[in-house]
Image (cartoon, rainbow, N blue to C red):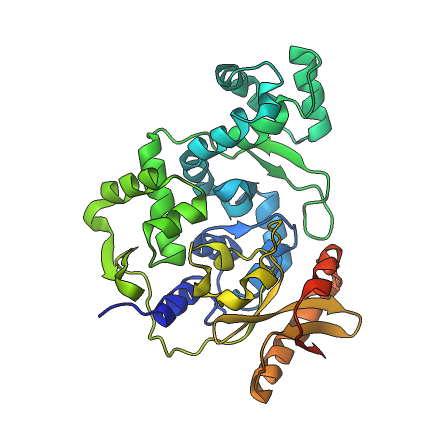
Length: 376
């Protein structure tokens, strides 16, 4: 039997712990989810609040502090939080993309260094970041090592290419506006890049499948031939399924694929939640008519409201609770369920940052006409 579009929605929600909150430790939750987008420091916390029953943000604080969960530039050349044991193969798998984006950039070329120079300096750099260093400290170290260079300098490129992660700097969500960096918990894995890409593909399917090669390429920002080679390398360890419109989908054999009529409760999703961005076909969770409203041209992805597994609007904190802008009519029971989520979210944010995401408020002026209610 072919997997329907609605069946794909339910499969992804199940794997992302969005059909029902589970009682699970935060490291195991992050590993299950695969990768939490972390451009905004609050987003991994809000993402886990949506997924983990009784989520205590102090547990994620502790996991970041112990480097059991790490924050680093990975897929799509953006910041993600991942389980520490996933970082080496994921970072290794992304080297083609990261190196092309940084070492081929004119800003790196302006330093006069070559890619070989960058590789040669990495062991010294890793010695420097055995303890946390700020951007300013590392820029100064490079200047002392190579002399004055045009800004932004070689560190701008190597902080993505080298195996380094963000170090907690304090603040309500453990990472403040001025980042610091430290060596990743482990170096590059001993196997070749093909095995690392296979790991990335497998982990993607575990967390977001079933999926097409195009979905995987979009999630990671890898070229399609690299993805196809990885799928061929995985061979019969992955299964093939018929998808909507006759497309071929790939999946892990034991990946949950719930019935398409499985209920999906409302959720108030974090900004840039990975689930909205994981597949090339955003309609798995985002109706096409709403895509431009929630995924802005500059790349900002607004905090969204899911009803029946689909984006139906956006939310933001206000003085009286959570303001929800619904792009279409919702039933009274749907509003009631959203209000219950909002009450919990207000309580969750109260001790950390009650006005989370406030700096993105400009986008609300650009929203289409919507039913707006303050709930919670």
